[in-house]
Length: 380
Image (cartoon, rainbow, N blue to C red; front, side):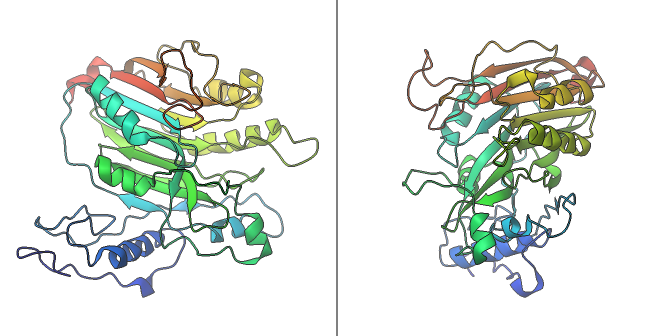
């Protein structure tokens, strides 16, 4: 493909060498994007290099996002149908290089309601208010491309397609949003969106490099859940950032409320989040709030807290539907004392928190403003 007079031809990646799962999945996404964009000279033409017509070319470079399967099932693997229903993980490196202007970091966490939340608008608002690098931890990110199977195959696969309203709603594709905002992206799907060729899952976006990205399945309670994690290199050392979404309920019967299932998922999550400095943005779905064992595990065993120093939240809900509950959390673990101050706030679209949605979603965004300690800040 030639994009213009000064645009060299990019080598085509061979799709025959790659499978659909694990690290090779990204190559399938690259191939799909190549086919879609090979005749459009003025658009981004790969999902990994950010090459644009008229600029210096870069060869497509697959970025692996390994997904660790949950191995706690006995007998048949009930998660296999869920895995077969989703597309490939996506890794984009699009953010221009930038240098730290201060020892500050902004972290945004938000459930996008399967792509209905206006993430571009909220990111613009945060950038206007905070002069600091940004990390965005997203739940229910929406994606539709050729890597998602056109149809759910088999009865088990159709059951594992996930609930999805057939009513049409404007939905922003997380890949397109990352391109528009020029943010690096690591997206891993959890489940299919009904019968159509789209999926949803957790994502991390940032204008800082995202290293050591990986994902892992949580114990199956109701639906397949796959948190995604990455490392951000701060001046004083690494910061682990994680986006997660726990099940809202359990299977029919005594476990329907899902309290025990969420505790099991939380325990597995904490086994995987090991860094001394970590930020967890999650829709925890704690219907019983801090009385649930999941909260005690995070607070006591995981050493996570709302802010540095820890403080109680000033809001009574983050879920904007009914019943209004605190379901969303932005938690910080700082075992090494590297953070001087961190404050978490809820973002409201309406000054009096009115309206049917919040920036298009049924959840409020949460924003953490983090200030590094003197030692970290002095190394920038």
